[in-house]
Length: 103
Image (cartoon, rainbow, N blue to C red; front, side, top):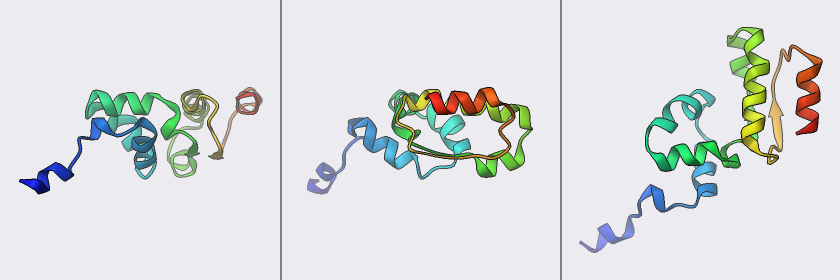
């Protein structure tokens, strides 16, 4: 019985710790799977904790170019100014580069 006391619920983790864990997941998992697990996880993903480093390189190679700019705006907005590293290719417009620079 004492061993069970050593376990904690995921919802008790600080959001920045959950975010650090979620950064090890793929972009697809963070955007489509994790938010549907529970409210706590969805809340963490809605915050900036998971979006300090954004790597879209692989995703850019597999998607239509017009979707890249929209995804960048979405993820950079989610980062709420905490973005430290961005890896992306095939940015379509100067407007998107300006948006990235301003945020």
